[in-house]
Structure formats: C-alpha cells, structure tokens
Amino acid sequence: KPKRKHALTTEEVTRMVVNLPDTLISKRNKAFILVGFAGDMRRSEISNLEFEDIAPTDDGIKITIRKAKTDTTGEGQTVYIPWGTHKETCPIRALFDWLTTSGVKTGPIFRSLAPSPFGYTITKRGISGATIARIIKELAETVGIDPQKVAGHSLRRGCATEAAKSGASLIRVSRHLRHKNTDTTQGYIDDVNS
Figure 1: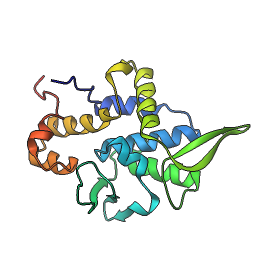
Figure 2: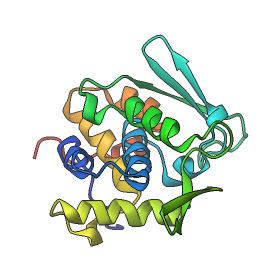
Figure 3: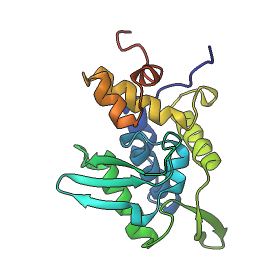
C-alpha cells in the first residue's frame, strides 16, 4: 500500500498563511492555498484555474473546473466555496485580494512571478503544479511540519479529513471531492477517531 502524504489540518493551514508578509508573492500563495484547501482541489486544478472560471453566488463563489482527473467526458466540474468565518483565512477574501493586487482580469489566475529589480513581475503563464507543491512544502516547514511528508495533495486530503472530523457524511465529502466512488474518498480521510 502506498504511503499517503500528510493531511494538512485547518489549524496547520491557518499557521501557514496568517503570518505571511504583505507582498505580491505571499498574496498569491495565500490565495491558492486557501482556495485549494476549501475547494478540495488538485494542484493541476489550481494551476489551470482561469478568471473566467469563477462566478459569485449568494453565499460565496462557484468555480468551474474545466479539466479534472476524474472528468473523463470533459463536461467540467463545479466547486462551491463559501465565505470564510475568519477574515484572515477566508479563501474568497484572499482570492479577491490577490486579484485586486495582481490586476488579473482574464486568463490564468495564479500566475508565475518573474524576479525583477523591484521585486516580481507577473507573467501571463499559470503557476505550475510542481511550483504549487514546492511552496506548500516550504510553508509547511516554516510551521514545523516535515516537508518530506507534505505534497500538493496534502490540501485535498486535509480538507476531506477535516470535513469528516466535523461530522460530514462520507457521501457529502465524496461529492465535494468530486469522486464517483466513496471507496476512493475513504482513502483520502485519515482516521478521524485518533
């Protein structure tokens, strides 16, 4: 049986993002981590997310995932993210802060940043899945988590585990993960009784 990566908890994700400096790169990183966690998103889904894929709803945002691992027919999948309870960890506020600061109004949302004499310049390219995984590892290490135990998948596993711990049914967690089979979902959830 393959060894599963660490499932990041809400508390760990909070520690990873609350003390980030008020910089362009930190705003981007905070936004993709919180959106990825709240939306149970794969790193490829985060990196492929485009401005046109987001729409406001009465209680949050709706994200259309155009390409997903389990979407074999290419119909697209939908994820709903509500407003967060706490301002400093609200995924929607973090996303809007990044969009306002970056000026992104079309195309890839989470973009690569190129070093420049005055900090960073925003490119037109989406951030890569490998970069997302590296940043998650780096931020996990800053809060005392072994980076070898963490991967891009740690956000997805963490959200599933936290939902199960809070009493969400397996079917509901499976729906949010966009799994067709609850057996697959069970593999994402750490032992909630430990």
